Image (cartoon, rainbow, N blue to C red; front, side, top):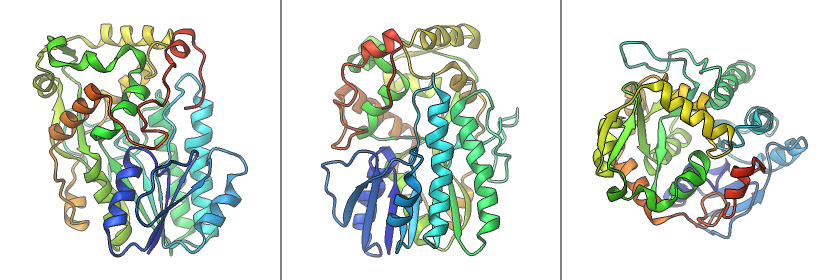
Length: 353
């Protein structure tokens, strides 16, 4: 099989490239990214494409021709102060990818959706399966865009019934080598690497309603690999146990969990975001408080997928990578990407990552 990965140099893409390289059924991989890395894994070649560009469609069709499957991972998280820019890449770019898959007559499309596409969960924290509504949380750009692309994909599937479409809806995905990138995307300069040392975090504040599902990136990549190689279609929830909350996080930091009202935490985040001190918006914080807890039975039975790492193992590895400033040799994950950007956040001067 020849597989094309759109967005192959990020957190999930790098692990998926490695897993495809080790899978005897995969003969070659074409990784598409805005910036070509110096990293050269087995079976893999690279091409530069920006799905957010108006003229990207023809390039995508050319690269997709002859492929047995396309995995669409590309997603722009920043700048949250310019949602029109993320919309161009995440929504319009995804539409270009889908249209190019059809034009190039690729038989399989695997799309990276998210738990963030789901509507707020039930008040009793009842597990939701893949039939739960995917209308997102409208105030946050990330969840709004994920939900919109799900609607686009609904129409795409109806128009191309012979094409096998798989939607992956993972929880929060962590690995050691993505730690620096994720700090840069969501915490910014207010969270320098040394600050996460256990001796410097005596207490961990957090609202009682904050809980989420997580998994190791290698386990997420294994699920994506199976979605490509197994004859499945439709959506799959992907997450590891246990559900993570502030009480579970505190021991990983050697801290004491302290329940904190939501309103002052959100006000602090909103003030920092308005001052460009943190890149994550308060609307995203609101969305995280409302995401449902997913039932992953379908992935375990139909994909034959079982995570090798617990959710806490994944978070712990991420924290270790954060303390060490780890990354890898691709533009999104390189530890030195974005150095010197503290002034950008402080002054409100932004640029595309």
